[in-house]
Length: 146
Image (tube, rainbow, N blue to C red):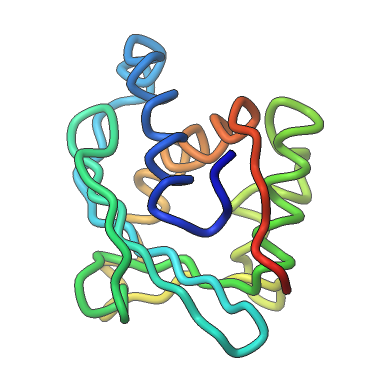
């Protein structure tokens, strides 16, 4: 059972996306390097998800995803856990647990980028990125201790 956050967890979700290629083609291609930053009580882990076409080409752990990513989604482990568990429980997130909602101003997560054009990539590809995370419903997940 993969542990969140880890390269193995993101790769497990990516394999589910690859198995659902036709459904993801309907959403459109994604050409973006997406950073994910998880704060686990001060111990931060960073990941780079290299989206290409209709899936994830490569996942790797990186010290600072903001240096390599078009944009980075940042949040505390508890907030990521809440979203992933909500997806698992419902097959997709309820309205309060979507990436779009969780990254709004004054909410627990944020989208960080070098400039507004790169932030706009998050919104351009939001539906596909959310669909990627929705595949976590089929990945038995263990969470790092927080």
